[in-house]
Image 1: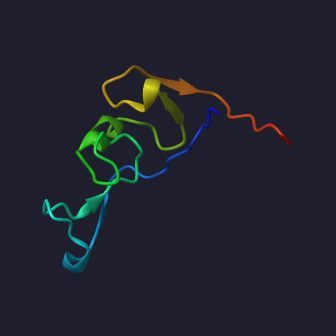
Image 2: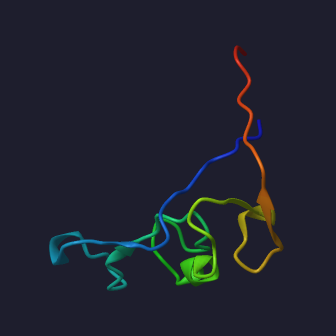
Image 3: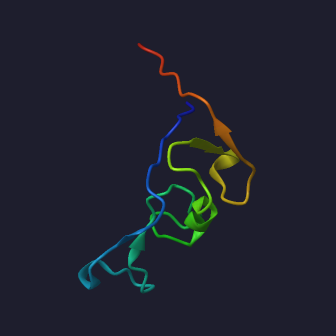
Length: 79
């Protein structure tokens, strides 16, 4: 089943040291582009030049993939 997920964050969430993983990572991805989820890998840098009121689609949810602005998201009722 395919899903469209909207991410409004443009940077990671810093965690407390108590939440730190074995690899020392303390940032959790909130933009949805990280290849190392749930941790941030810096992919949010691809969002730096986005306009605040625009909605963008990243092909294959990949920060290196093509990005295009979309005009509207239409939600389907039911099923």
